[in-house]
View 1: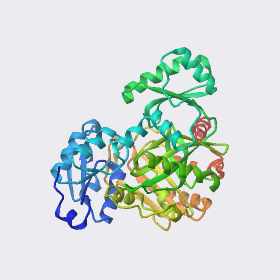
View 2: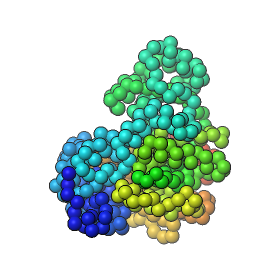
View 3: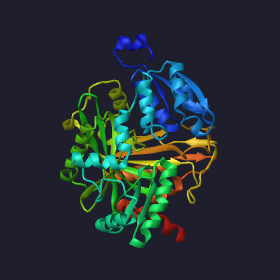
View 4: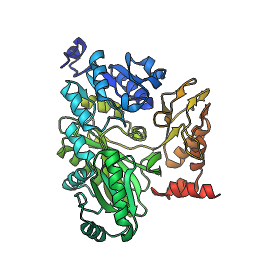
Length: 463
């Protein structure tokens, strides 16, 4: 176990150096929060990311492997070795990669380091969708209709479960996530083929063929509740956000707060989320994801990490979520109380991706020119600059454009102006697609659900 440094002993902190086990915009975001807290940072990179700007602004860095993520950012041994060589006392996993890997969190703790995230036990519970649903039901969190057990192998029993739920149903991998390992079944004759295909996909993608089944809601919205918890039994929720604008189960635009949800409806759900965190001994930040339809909430999963869309909640709540996450890992008492949480104005986030705006195929290459918008209520989280080489090896996200304004209409207008003022040359981006979406009348009126964007795209192709 590493010895505490003189600085950490003097300040009473559990660590004074954070290794950021991630890349891209979130690595730059975490680095900024650490600097503001007076913490040193260690950046790691693959060979493909050696020239990333945030590498040069870290206090130290190590290249831990080749471009392929499996041999670098997904290599626990390389990351732990880097922490040992640089004297880091804590590891921040960001999102994606190893951020929700219970075995990695456990290995970090066993190495005598601090994992900036929840305990491995909490990650394990919430990472298994069946166990998570059971825990949420015990805490009083409303769940999608369906049993809190894995589907049996017996075909007749599976047919009976589907009949009791009522078609359409959705079959999901118990260890799934990211939009993979799920199929909608509209009628009984499709059931067994869907289960066979999903089991095989789950086995290959997540290492387990375990499935569960729920009611498939026809026109829900995707609503999230952000929580922050400390090690002393304190927990708060920071309002809600709408992430319904999705393509192939991947979020494109997020906003906070969600439109048209009365406080008396959301309040008990938020408090139930907080209670669930206390029951499983949760620490740090996390997000409860729900489907919302006809005034009712239905829990679908919890993300035990920092979310890509955390900035819209930061903009409306005034809380720096990344700093709060790091402070919780330091063992500090949560500075917020539920009565002190407020939600002011409206915020949107657009994910700017290096991809063709029509086909959505990734676009790698060198950024030859970059102009980013500035002004009141505009924020850009990014890791790129002019001359940056976009790699084909990773997710296509290159920037997040966030705006805030007193009202939703004003925030939409501000986002339109900000998108118009964003110029990225040398590669293709989805900015034209985002600009068209913000001009859509149904989106402007809030008349959308999680299926709307896919339908909108189909109509655009026909036109």
